[in-house]
Structures are given as C-alpha cells and as structure tokens.
Image (cartoon, rainbow, N blue to C red; front, top):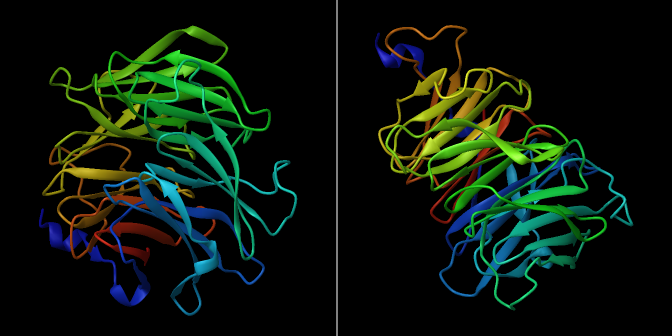
Length: 343
C-alpha cells in the first residue's frame, strides 16, 4: 500500500513556535488553563554545564502565540531530565489557586511554585544518607491518581517513591540490574520502569518483593529508553529501544510478545506519548525529524501499520508531549525550538 495515501500532513498554519537562545530538551504542559484560557508550558535548556534554565511560556490557542514570561524564568542545576506540572489542581501543597506546581529532575527531584510573576523553590528531595553527591535522576512520573506520590528513576538501578507532601521516601527499590531510564505510573500503587538491562518491569507497592517482567529487548542488553503507559486503557504500554526505529506496543496481559511494532520512522525514535483522550492513538518522534501519529488497529495486518499523519520538523526531534488540557495540541522540541502542532 502506498504510504502517501494514508498520510495527512500536519499543517504548519496550525502551529506555534518558540525560539529559545539555547538548545531545549525537557518540556511540560500544565494540566489546566489559566483564567484567560492560556496554557502554561515549561521548557528546559540542554547546556553542557552546571547552570541551566527553565522558561515558562504562555500559549494562547486563539492567536497561536507563545509568549515567554521573563519573571518566571529560573536557573536550574544541570539540564533538567524531565519537567512536569502537577497533574491535577488544586493541591494541598499550594497556598493560592492561581499557582502552578512544577517538578523537575536532574541531580535531585525539586518542586517549584510558579506564581503570576515569580517562581519559588519549594522542596529538594534527597535520599542520600551518606554523601553530598547523588546518583543523577533520569526521569520521574507524577501519580495522577494519588498526586502526593512522585516516582523517580536513577542511574543507580533504583526507583524511589516520594511522598512529596510529607517530604519522605515511601519506598526505594532496586528495580533493575542496570541504569533505570524511565518510570511511569499505571495506578495509585502500580508503576513500571525501563532500563539499560533491556527489560520492562511492573511493580506493586503492596508487594514490593516481586516485580513482573513484561518485555525484554530481543537483543540481550539493548537498553530501553522510554516508557509510556496508556492512561485510557491500562492494558497497553509503549517503549522504545536505543538506536531503533521501532515503537514497541505491549499488552500487559500477554507479556514478552509485543502486540504491535510501529516501524515507519527512518531514524531512531526518541520520544513517545499516548493521546490523553483516546486509547487507540499514540505519537512518536525521532532523529528523522518526524512526528508520526498512529491509530492502532484492532488487528494488525501483515504489512505492518502506517501512520495516520506526519509532521516534518527542521531537525531531529528530542522531546514530545501531548497536551492533556488541550488534547488537540502536541508539543515537540528540536534544536533550540519548541513547537506546538494542532492535530
């Protein structure tokens, strides 16, 4: 089948672009809109030195404008590996309803209060008892069912579950044999992680001694870099392998065998995001400078699955987020640009 008949190009007239003065990597979209229906977006720099920056932008979907707010920019130690706004508002941690809570990871997990015209550092979470040095955090996920919980993943093979309201560790697990690269919550007490050891593992906080291996990369010790759990249908998750053009779709009811492999990227896949409002749609982006949106069929045909729409960026796409507050919009980051695309 000719691919072009299946593809609809995402039109650039339905986009908004922010140009930064430095390369961008981490990115977060707030889960709610402000009173003026604007959405806050946080972007993090990727500069190979200690001092990095987080900028807070305001997106107006009516005028398709992205406006930075200089009073909300702040320094961040090292490039943030991930940014996330509080998954639901309001929080008992917040004193004002017009305030957003932002979490960042890098050397430590940190919480910041984003106000109308200032940002205040709220908390720094450090579980190292013995040293002032810490194992860098590769990622984290904020539990949207029980938002007092944040789970972090680290290069020291552990996942740590924090109670951010009490500021204490709920549990710390040796999750894998090698570095843990990503973590994702499925339920209030259930999370999954991926690692350089090539496995996807599911953990239940009610039974911390055991984990379930859902998938292992076909070539031993091929690292798995990212994990996305389908919030609309928790039976499904997606992962990507290092230096691979495949997105692997897993059904946790049938471990080890992927239910689908999406193989239309022409370079390594770097980011994945499920649609927040649909259980059958997923977006992927990669080194081929393309963002592809896929509709997963009930049964995959013999020739594989083609994407339903394609967007071509100017260079390799490093990051991707699908807006929960405004599901018509997907955000991508490449080079020093952050772009919002209407889907």
